[in-house]
Length: 505
Image (cartoon, rainbow, N blue to C red):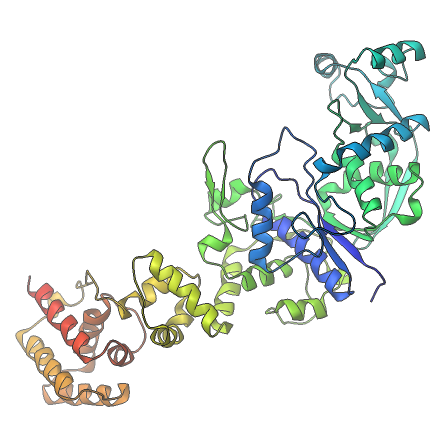
């Protein structure tokens, strides 16, 4: 256990929460809980042009659904707030100006049009050591002109001044020692013209002020590492810099590139934790919750994308994950997303889940399908009969709705061609037996049914399949006499009579 561990998840409120983001949350959370530390949610909303109304609330709802509650955050508060960067705006300028004063950053007055023109002139243009003297900034302009531009209100940004040819190195908790050449990085903007910081400045300042000890983020942020390393150094905070871990990407099923929302749409599975509706376009992107995943299965599946505990065990509760998790077992290579495997996790968790929670979830699914359930005990019994057949929560509708209402249609393709008057007489007689022998167990009903079958010269398959279809509407479901017992004799007879009419029509 490490002392005073503080980790954070710092999303931008720009849209849906990708499953890779939730995995980052999870690994942060597991590490914090394992070490008796704090898990902080910080909303990085400095880019107001990309801010999407409702996205922050959506992120918080996703975490609640997953059962991951921050110790500090916009809702919880805490000693290092505020926890939205837009509410911390005033503090960033001081740090950016300090960097300018110390020679590690500079003012840049280039207009968007001037930058676009330079990009047209120079292929793969980077605003850095090679071209900064050709641009309009405080390194290329006389001091007096710079002062006049600032005093006259000319818009400017503050850029970091990257060294021309230095090697910066850090130890990644997953990848080991990682080195970068500073000449390959451009002079990133630290403070924008509107006074808002960019990610690069804000993440360093906030991690320092919030005393973050470990920073876990996706490997796509590795190219930004040299800028952040130098900012920690230039601001004099090197000793307080958190330890970093860059998590492997979640890849497309074929392993060819990072999994995207488009891949999910193309291949027919969600990539967001919950449904996300774009407020501008109205486009709905489906989520794991709404498609029928249990949060326990979703979290379990994510944990296994790029991590294992060194054993063959695959099913873990959150408490078990807290006990077993270690960064040393996180893979460096990307993890292919397999939707069939994801559904397998959900199937296993449906089997594991017992009691009122699953009953409540299934009741909600049935209600959405127009099936009202008044007896929770009966529903609980039904769930135990059918849950091995259910991969997603909506599967319970097809597998259990017929316990609560008679089928509207019948799959009679295998029944009508072989139907005889003798079979009709058999079911009329069996109906009479049901009404005159109420209260028999499922086993006793089965024995009576088989006796009648033999007495009338039928093979059991001749009448068992039609009986199932009469009760259920199709060729599926648990043992037919369990169904009979649960729906009751009167309802079974009603369904037999209704089906006989359908067969004759």
